[in-house]
Length: 351
Image 1 (cartoon, rainbow, N blue to C red):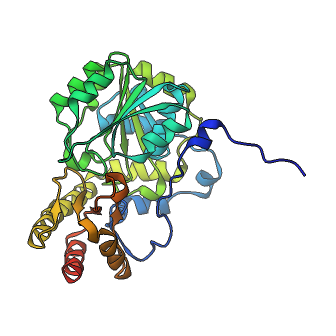
Image 2: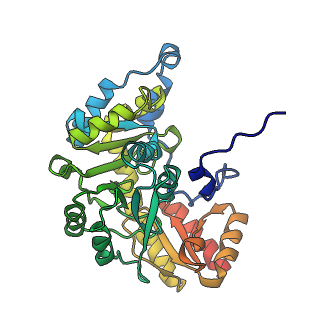
Image 3: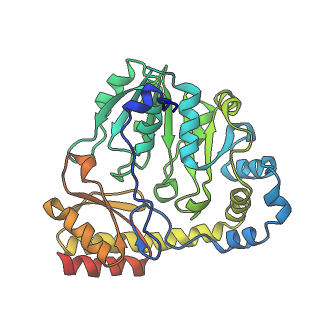
C-alpha cells in the first residue's frame, strides 16, 4: 500500500479554519454580515437570461470589466475581477509574499489575512486592538519601520466595526515605504470612507472590494482588486485566465446597471442599525460603535448561552469570544428593520 504524501510544512503548521457553513437554511442569518434582503431583482433577471451557450462556454469578462472600471472611476488596467475577496487576497499573497517573509496584522481582523499568509509560509507579526478597540497606530508605524512584506487593513474592520479615517490611512501608507498595504473595503458602502482614488499615486497600495455584502451576491463570489497599473499588471500575470464565472459576470452587470437597488438596501440599513443600537441600550447591553453592517456586543459570561438560545429560536449570530481572549463578545449583523425588531424581542426574553 502506498504512503500518504505529506503536505507542505507551512500547511502542517496552520490552524484549521472552521466557519459554520452548514445548517443555516431557513434561519435568520445575522452571523455572516450578508444582505438579508436577497439579491436585487435586476440580478435575478440577468441570471434568468443567461443562455445555455453562455454557461457551456468559458466566460468573456473584458466588456464587463471595462464597464465596472467606469462604474468605479478607475482605468481598466487598474482593475482585476476575482472569485470573491477571498481569491483577491489569495492572489495578492501568492504574488507578493514569499515564504518566511513577514506580514504585519492588527488582530482580531478578517481571518483570511492570516490564513493565506500562513499558507504561503509567511511569518506573522501580530499587533492587537486596544481595550476600547482602538487601532494601535504607534505600534503599527514602528512595525512598518522593520519593512514587512505586506500589511492588511480591513476598513471598517471585521469583527470590531472600527474605522480608520483618511488621515490615519495616509500615515500608514506613507510609512510603508517597502511594504504592500492592502486596504480591504468590503464594507465601504456602509462607511463611505475609501482610499480607492489613491491607487494612482501610491504604488504600494492595493484596494479590495466585494459584491458579497451590500450588493447581496455572496453566493456568486465576485470581488475586485484595484491597484496602480504596475502592481495590477503583476497580479494579472499570476491570475488564472478565467477567475470569474458567467453567472457572477451577468450579476455584476445587473448590479452596476441599477444603482437604485443598492440604495434601497442601504436605506434599510440606515433605518435598522440605529434601531438595533437603541434596543441594545434599553437592554443595558454594552456594544462598540460600528461603521459597518454589524455590531460587536459584550455579553460577558452569558455569551454562549445567548448565542445558543437565539439559535434555538432560528436566529444566528456569531460568537467571537475566542478572538478576544475568551471575553464574551458576539457579532450581530444588521438585518432589515423587521428582523432587527425580532432579534431584540428574543434578546429581551433571554436577558
